[in-house]
Length: 284
Image (cartoon, rainbow, N blue to C red; front, top):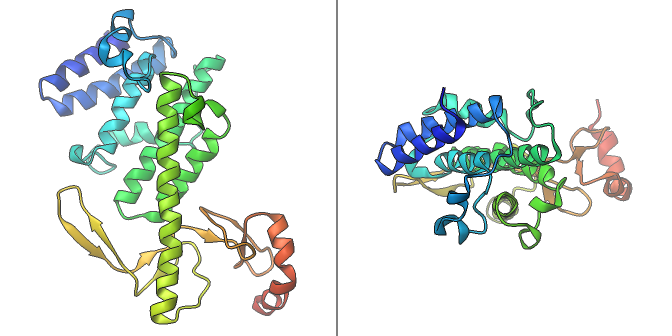
């Protein structure tokens, strides 16, 4: 049976030969082989690490699994490849197996270095899933994936600040984390802007809760094939704190009315004098 490195090399040969689907298939085979039977944190052969392409790229992983994983998720991120849950269901299952919220049997990731590798794969999967769901028009799911990925990345400082990241796997993950931060910030800004537009144009003064649709506000989508579509009824992807006004993926709800949302207990307590009457009036 071929080793993970041999499967990776075959994938690269297929790629340079224009056999894209075979490339994608062999990346998956290599990942499964490595995590099942081989050294999780094995480095690339010295000749590959010293090649100009890799040596010049600070964010190119130096571990075999890291490189294969980077290339694998790259197929999902590239809109020209058209890889998603529908077109590549088995590959999508592999991606989901490493989602930040998943909890499969990862006993082979038992050393400290392997655990860091696993956490990085899960962070990267969160970013990739966020891109896929946002591209599919599900802003709420995209926000959830980004928040899960960022929360996991925060557990290891090497993934959270690009300036402090080492070369290789950590630098690659720092870029992934920054991508999630940028995209999440865009979703949050768009939510607030859409709510303001709805209020200014249509007098909507509702709570504008997460998952709620602004029925008269839409947005333009530029599709991967070059077409431009206008989507109506934009969905709010975030909650807004009833006290400080901050937005985030999902906040805690008031235990009384089950409607008002807050950043934390401190904000809820500070807002209670203003919220008290409305809270009691809304209860059954």
